[in-house]
Image (cartoon, rainbow, N blue to C red):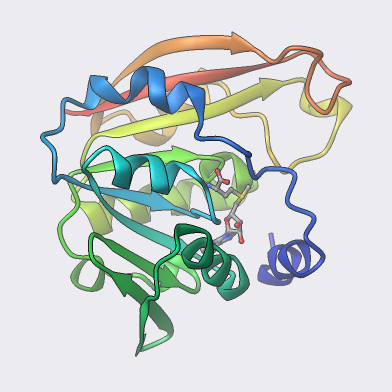
Length: 212
Ligand SMILES: C[S@@+](CC[C@H](N)C(=O)[O-])C[C@H]1O[C@@H](n2cnc3c(N)ncnc32)[C@H](O)[C@@H]1O
């Protein structure tokens, strides 16, 4: 998936993946991570998700990575927060108390730059990437976070019926990407009412990847 694909989506405001409310699966399942308040949660490919506001409101700190500066400007505007903006190599860091968002390609983000995180919340990140990028992404996440526990949300549908993104990622794929570093448990499977894009039967699956 080329960067231009995502820049075009943001510039045309074609952001069907953006949800108007914090994600209900996050709200229902976040407790499984058993994180004390003040823990720092990493959201790869974060867009301008309202889940960030939900985490902040619940007393957590947030780090994110997002390609689109347009998205990140909107995120801070919607949070009502003025960020400090600092160029850091190939990335730009948008920071405010309890929040750091790294703007640019996540593959340019290092463990040093990111700093310590206590958990990863992946919604619409792994499934936004085509098959050939997923293994690289999973390895990179492990490398820059030290393989901290994850709450991961995937989608499953018949890929032959529609191209991604989001791509269908089944349990076997999750296991093949993350076995070895994590104990993997499926927490919840929820059928998408009316089907994916109103057309194809689909389910969202919530995974707990617990540091092995
Ligand atoms: C499907 S959206 C999901 C956004 C967010 N997680 C949410 O739930 O609304 C995927 C996001 O990943 C960003 N993205 C894609 N490739 C990226 C990369 N290599 N590095 C950082 N962000 C990337 C896109 O700009 C887009 O905002």
